[in-house]
Image (tube, rainbow, N blue to C red; front, side, top):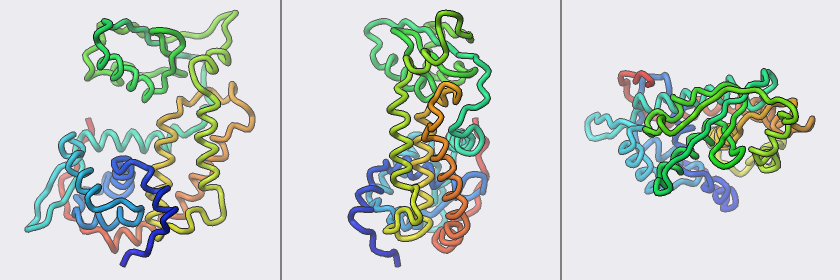
Length: 285
């Protein structure tokens, strides 16, 4: 039986989009395991974080339509497994969380620059391009010119948008009188990035964070979802051009400590709750 969820905790938990929670769940408990998960057990897990059965079923259906999940029937039960597309998305998230991290302390001074000029009527294409650039760590330096620290694989970032003829991509270094710190604070909202990490610390940097959550499986799911959203919104600006007390440093330490403490009990709870069947694992694209 699932423990009662405090109304205030429920309000906090459901502020996270169900699909974001679903991707975190799949990344932790399904990726690289060669299994598909029974929809009823997914509903059981998500009830712990205040997501309704209707919202879970709607999210599963929507993700199937977007080629992020594949249906597998076993008797009268419906199971959901990964596709090549979702496996690639999840592996990218895993890389951002566990390998690249939130602190860019080995930047070599290189910037990637993308210039573009699209027809005025292409509002949808412009929106899609900007969304991809933000996803890839870019910020707007000036009209039609975006910049990101390091070398970014722009063709892979925008390959399905069919806009390559409208882009000009460069790698560059700043030269006097332009300073790298000036670029960082012009193209990116540094105070807003810091505030997101400070909000994470206000919620998680305690002896018993989310004490009203039902169990460590719920805490694990919420922690990973919030952290992944943070690092995906973070352009990883060079540490040398950020304040010494940059909150991402402490936030990353808190995330790693909590993630390790939740891992074993959450795995045990998941093993008792999840009904899975073996399936052929997808090959990420």
